[in-house]
Image 1 (cartoon, rainbow, N blue to C red):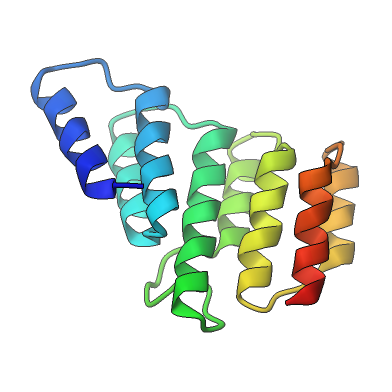
Image 2 (image 1 turned 45 degrees about the vertical axis):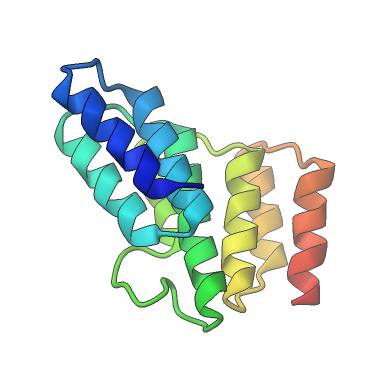
Length: 150
């Protein structure tokens, strides 16, 4: 994703007094996730949260994806490529603390992010799927298979 372009559009929207809402925030976080920029994702999440913008499961899924992609790009087993922010698992639990119920996309993002840095916990992930009544899809099982292969 072209994060800088997304940030420019977001700044334009703010300057124009546009209604910045969860959808707008999630689009920006998605751009950060696609670019693998966990630092930007966290910055924009905090920026929007401090302005009272509600977050949802997609918000945290993007944060988890950004963290995972940043760690994969760094190719080293750190929670976050060169940054001191939350790990993918911490974002997952922050979503739970916020009263959100994870879905299969969020759990799959967690599996991908954690396994990217050498953390392979299939029993824990399956327990989470059961606990939160997440019906695993082919994509989710593919993530588990890929995680085992890393």
